Amino acid sequence: MNDRAGQPAEASDLIDVHELVQAYFDRVPDVTNPAQRVAFGTSGHRGSSLDTAFNETHIAAITQAIVEYRASQGITGPLFIGKDTHGLSRPAETTALGVLVANGVEALVDEFDDWVPTPALSHAIIAYNAAGHDEQSDGIVITPSHNPPRDGGFKYNPPHGGPADSDATGWIANRANEIIEAGSGDVKWAEPSAVATYDYRGAYVDDLVNIIDMDAIAGAGIRIGADPLGGASVNYWQLIAERYHLDGADGRSSLTVVNPLVDPAWGFMTLDWDGKIRMDPSSPNAMASVVAKAGDFDILTGNDADADRHGIVTPDAGLMNPNHFLAVAIQYLYTHRPQWSQDAAIGKTLVSSSMIDRVAASLGRRLWEVPVGFKWFVPGLVDGSVAFGGEESAGASFLRLDGTAWTTDKDGILLALLASEIRAVTGKSPSQLYAELVAQFGDPAYERIDAAATKEQKARLGKLSGDDIAATELAGEQITAKLSHAPGNGAAIGGVKVTTENAWFAARPSGTEDVYKIYAESFLGPDHLKQVQAEAKSIVDAALQG
Image (cartoon, rainbow, N blue to C red; front, side, top):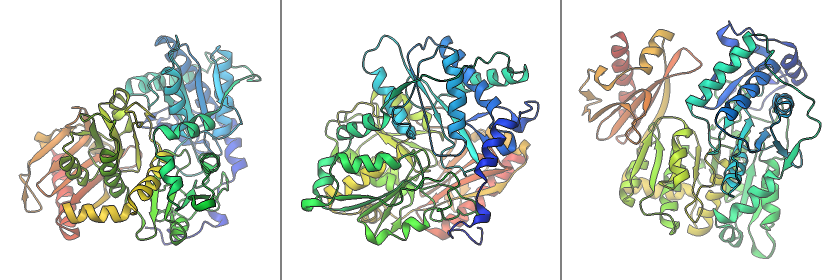
């Protein structure tokens, strides 16, 4: 933990935005250097122009590869494209538009040149493809999500509206690197002078009545605060307040945009745990200035730069642990959405709290446990077999009131509004409702820690089987399962998960650092959790030694 974690950023913490943008255009990557190659993780290609990892050459090649990929898949409809507030997002959008226009692709930018949250773009794709057009649409979101201001990000969303799967991203990344290695001669580019537009903000905000009980929120007379953390949701929250008359008049609820500032250096943020500026609404340190205002509102929320994550702050508990809010959201939704199918499952990633398992059992609902990555929820959200999908990292989405798909990407605006609906309908804060779950099911202690690992060890961990775990006990309890594939869909988890009656741990290699991540939880208290963590490291280290 950095000594200044949770403290306001100082001038020395801020990036030089001009230098960042200039490096985007000036530096040319060497794709024989692994650090400068196009590489799609769970959320697209990310990097900094200052590291020659996110530059004009990269974005032009990636966009050309996307053009070729969508042609190979028979995707001929419009391509929705939007950007967040990071300093590299606008230049990347300009580059991408030039390539799309030159290739004859109809690209739809925001009608008001506004920033576009990830969920608004997913919503646009789904709405277009549900309207019965002869051709399908897809999209590009330009965002590194909650990453620091120096980073850029570039994501492709196919016609289902959610994150592309590894088959698509692998093909796109490989083709982009081929293009760059060959000198980028295959890239077509034209001045993007005339580009079609789409009202992302209006379409999304108008449709909220079909997924959230906006009347209940408006009539409850509660005080709502929304902090966009300098991100793409800033004008969406303002329009929500206007469209649904959340002005506090005549006993109606009020919605205040707590901080409407947009600054690509994010000089108004407090520093995250490691002393970096990071717009993570689930981090107590990054959210310190927001939490300080908790007493001024009945519900106070935060979103990251592309609004795919949420943070929920209540006056009685401060910032809620994301796992806690997911459990409350599930309990509420599955008892307040009568049109949802009784067969619709509850989706969770396997590193999310097992409090969700207990809630699911009490509701008589099937639990659908998948590997880390929101892309795994996409098929279930599309066909309605999964009504809610959530990740421990504060990302989730769920179905409309009528049980049809809303977004197939994470939606932080939606989950923040759900917190207000819960407060309006139940008269209790989400944290008070979580306390009731604790009284019913127990109080789990949950934490993620990192352990050192070489690249070779990380590669071995990613391929471990449950059979490679020799231990039969964990922290005094019999081991009940050793998993290398997710129970919900049978997909490889890229690591292992070990469970007992009252505890579990999961170990996965980091994609960016020489560490592996240990997620652990115990219903027997914090001391037992520490024992689980210590033994988990020993168990994994023994397996890595072979």
